[in-house]
Image: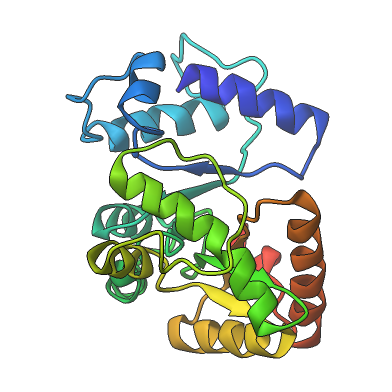
Length: 257
């Protein structure tokens, strides 16, 4: 917690008002990555609430008798959002009165239940008076539905490799996924990416509007994994125009007050 507080305290000092901190209890990668980070399989995240409280101590006002201080970081009050893909983080965010970001970009099945639980159990805090839900979803926008679906085969291949225990690098898009996966693998990948919004501007607009209407999300986190950076930038530009047109902009004042 002290290292994180000083890292984000430094960023806040350099870019005042532009930094927020997303925290989750996930280990941060596969087994090899966990080992490189000196994290063991026994670290299952049960200590996350205590670590979070310690971090908030370092980012908040100095407390009487506090011996260890984050420099910079102390009293920076960097806004914290809890990240999660299950009920655990939803309940914790609700209990602490913090914003909650749900990872529907890889765990869409649990979205509705977690969002409902968060809103029902939310306790107002010094940070938030009302619940603030962020939803992360895969989004790819292109000139046509077919063009976007072809770009979408890159993240589909990545999830296929994840299922197979292979490296997670992005591969170039292909014309069809059918020769690459079995029926079971196809079902598994499509389930993981079930919240994806992929298509032309009209298709993406309809998908975003439905997502917000269904979840009452206050903010949408767009996850765009394309092989070519230029395709990602074009998709972002299209989504930005769509978001402006349908007034899909985050209520930042509500989030951080």
